[in-house]
Length: 245
Image (cartoon, rainbow, N blue to C red; front, side):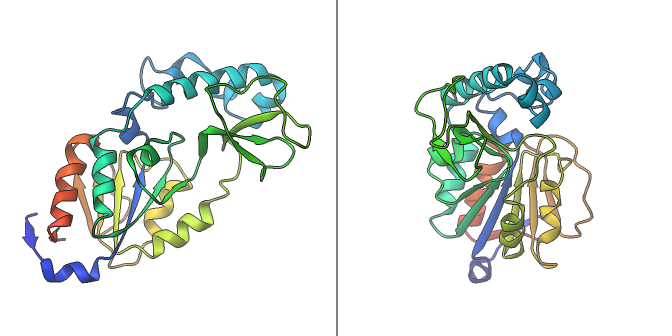
């Protein structure tokens, strides 16, 4: 499907909502959940990423996320992250991410909503509204909030509710363009956000793997990695070129 020049059309495309998954962070060297040989492969999810795991062995859970935090801090934003920052020159860009790293923020994106939490923050086990920045890479056993409870990773674990889901649904419904990057659309409820868009909203999906069309009639699939697919797409958007659907 060819691109066409549509400078006059730019006025109708004001808000771009970008939904990102593990694929965009993988190109910065952050292990994905399914990656062979990655950090996740060394652990059983049930031992490190559930409320039950926390209840059984806090030290193991803390160590797992401490190691992930070190990995995130060593990583750098890649061309896909920086390209999304360029979009803000002409569009209202809201990023919704499944990723717990801070690469979007470090690249310079101004509006980022984290569905599954943030690795570089901790929170109280007593009150989830008590959230703190982590200065280094560790949460240590015995570190407590002002209420006296052990600090835990500020992460949505398997089996927990996704507290930002309602807000993400509202944001998605406001999209003039919905751009999906680096996700298989298999992880729910987040994958269902694409169904919150308006019927006439163009949906672009950038991913190197085959992805089943989730029932979207106006889906444009770009079979590329985030680093290869996002920068040229952003350039076209900035020039007012949008793909026919």
